[in-house]
Image (cartoon, rainbow over the protein chains, first blue to last red):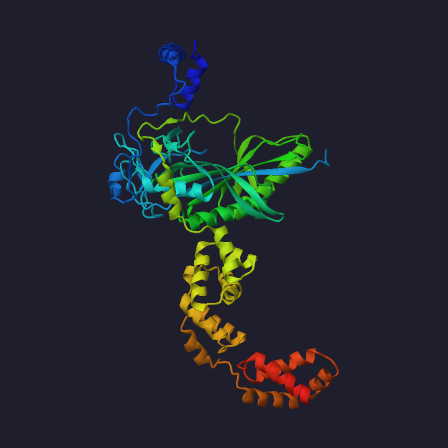
Length: 95
Length: 479
């Protein structure tokens, strides 16, 4: 098995997700199947092939350094669950 | 163990906000300050359905920084996602660069007490800045996203510095270089230049070493240097007791002058980097690099050497005058008007810099123009003013501003080289000070200085000192 319970727990922790034990077991199986499927690609010889980061045959898409209008603050805060003094207000997170 | 000698190893990580007009991936302004959350749009707020488009100028600034630090510019590069959860990061990931930074393997030479030393630059990459959080007293955090998405470069050095002084010298050179090439305004007080320090110590025989501590929250170069000194001592003390430092992140406390534990780094942080799917790759060809190289101004080191050879000024002075581009530009403008590099340099190095330092002022805040300064120096050069009178005029210029010529007239400072007039003064001073004349004849050279002073005083400081010297010597010889 390529994917272990530990891997799933680790990834879940990084994604701040909590699961029951049976869910973790289920995910381990499912993820293992997925990774196993993708592993078929290992059969391909890629010795002289650059890694494909994007499938689009496009490079260097830039914009010029020009200022455009920003949103009004009320619009900025439209989706804020809570606000104060023009700021988004969230539970305190201390590193 | 107490006789063991240790070497300090310091590496730096510097973040500098790039001086683009607009943000990294959208057209919002990068202007510092402004009302909270007014420099934001759906892209830098990370709203679903938006797509980032890279600011070309930001890439160019990063490449120019690489060129200025003798780095290799990547032919191919890309952006990556760095995933972590913190409310100052709207998307829950930062668009950064992981394994294909824009620039690698650079270096720069710093001046140390024992000569030149080469400091390696491991990499320079580009990324977006985060928002700012303000921790309220009621236990909540308030977020302002004006800064979110401002382009940053991160510069990582090799652990090539071995003291606080060397780190300080590197940081000064880095800052002046970024200012010279105008890719960042480097205002530490506004957070546009930030620096983290990695430090550990190794015994000279290499057998004992401490774990690397990373120090954050350094808001000035001075703080960085003090933190390095503090950490060096702490690491050595622990090793000498047979203990070791933790692999940890520490914070600098500017009030207490010490570092304190912030978090351990027992596990390498897992940011789950992966190629940013919304931004296509960069291909940087030689033509583009060449164009950017041509755009670069003369760098501090080259300018310093040109100043030495073109204006005949000492190396130390040339170093001070080129420490910021603003000062170097000021000097050259002054030289162009004055036509005398040494004289211009002397006036800047002594009078101007002393007053600027005393008042804590920047060149931009001067009350007089460089042309007016040149006019003053020209009056010294052509003999209109003697040194003392010129200093008086300078004081007035510095404190109140105004036209140098008008100040000279108002204060009646024009130097007199009228030999007849000075001769009369010399004669009356000699007859009023017979004791000094006697002393001089008995070989007391100091008496001569006293007599010069008396003549200058009698002329209200206007007499040309050189003429006074000559006439006095002649008069004494003839007595």
